[in-house]
Amino acid sequence: MKTKALYLTVALGLMLGFSSCNLDTFPSDELNSDLLLQDAKGAEYIMDGCYAVLKDEVDFLGYASGNCYVRHYFQLSEFPADNICLSAHTTDPLYEATAYMMTDGLKNVGTLWMVAYKVIYMTNTVIETLDADKPENNQLLGEAYFMRGLMHLHMATLYALPYSYGRENIGVPLRTTTSSEGIKRNSVGEVYDQIVADLRKAADLMGASRVPGNAGYPCKDAALGVLSRVYLYMEDYDKCIETVNEALKGADPSTKLEPTATFPKYFENAKTSKETLFCIVHETSDDRGQSSIGSMYLKDGIGWGEIYPSDPLMYLYERHPEDVRMSFILPQFSGKAGKKAYVTVPASEGDPTAPHIKYVANLIDDGAGNYSFKGADGNTYPIEKRMVNGEAKPDPAGPYFEYHANYMGEDCMVRINDDVTLRTGYTIPMIFISKFSYQDGNPMLSSPVFCRWGEVILNRAEAYARSGKNAEALDDVNAIRTRAGIPNYSVGDLQGYENVIDVVMDERRLELAWEGHRHFDMCRNKLPMDRRYAGAQPYKIVDPVTEPHIIYPIPNNEWTVSGIQQNPGY
Image 1: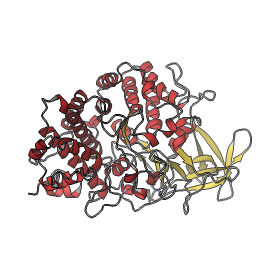
Image 2 (image 1 turned 30 degrees about the horizontal axis):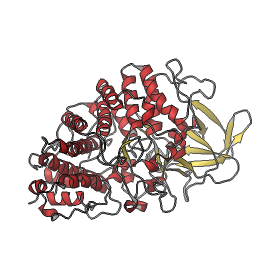
Image 3 (image 1 turned 45 degrees about the vertical axis):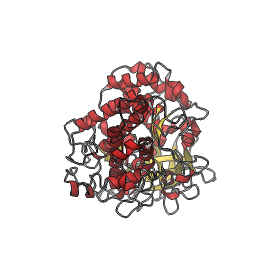
Image 4 (image 1 turned 120 degrees about the vertical axis):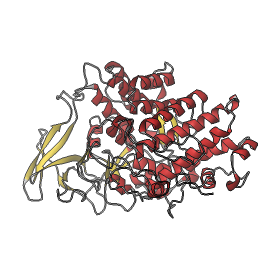
């Protein structure tokens, strides 16, 4: 019997869940709680199915190729922010997310919703089926609560306003049973309260990973790690700090991090690294080629290589060129001698969504640290070194700068680089990103990380900073910076920053770039995202308080069938 759109059919949800698990004990359309009770491995199969369905290509309204939860999640959570440059218009629906042109019929918007609620249904089956009085069931029950909490968190952050905008705002449907009755959108507060309860329950039930050395199976610390993020988003800073302390058990944060020497290979080896708390493990058989997450960031071989780091983010990294995190950034140098000035020309005010371009010129250096370039009109334009944070101090502890030029009547950002190959047909320098590449040597393969210790430590750092505990916040930030191989901060020397909060937010940006955090960080803190740099994304400052599309629409095939309310502005 058909149910409302949120679940489609129980059989379909289970088939998707088991698609990579070789479960053939029972026909998929006959699996139910009674049969699971008869099969001691049933709950384990279902949980394995939950992890599998997040990486499997699934059919949605006739689309299957590249239609994968993890791919869509890492794109939709990252691309609306200010860490990426989209080098050209693309027919992939990621474009609409990047350009704030989302609609309720997009396959990525609909697939995320569909798969997340299928996983939630599957976890509810396990929770309702397993005997909670038997200690041997604790780990699997903990995994079920963990995944139910994580999926609700993904839905709440993508399809509802941030918690900091108000508990009473409309959230997403909260599903804690397998019943399809009473589908409605709960309040943001109700959803977050349940997420907290589920993750707390998961942490209490779980111990070490069910499969030692494999971060594709959640553990107690994974639940606490995600819970610390939830408390941070809820602005419950004391609970965030308490939760991270519980996870650390008194250990020095640096002992939880991948060492400096091996960090450049961290994302290639995420599934076995001590830093990873939870990831979606991909094996060679899961290689999606051009449909992988890494394909948009890297062209090596068959990738598209259309997403590059934004200019402001590159300026932040280049403050310390020795930063080990720059190993994930791969400029495609041309090999030609000399430096270039890449001048961002603003888009026309009458057509703010039109791709704006870079004018590329040879850099003129007078030998005294003064730069200029010759414009298309034959005139010479001086380049201004503009301070971003605080007062200048001697290098290497000085603040970082951006270069600007008043070019033909416009205030233009200027990038100064060794000669970098331009993308064919465009004037955007090709700078690839490798955070989703090179597992087992395959440029299109990775095991995408949903939670790692680097984030958790920075969660506590922000909670400390917002609680006025600046020294403690900087201790956590410095654990990350020491691993990165760059100078530490002190309360007496913020290296040009005006306050510790700004220090923490920039460190989050540097450490977690392209991992799906920046957009949520900026929106929950009501901070503008300055996207006035070259690329196919709209040339504008995005104010999350006034931008109507900082959250995604409820999929058309959901709200038109189940009758739940669509998000405002769609």
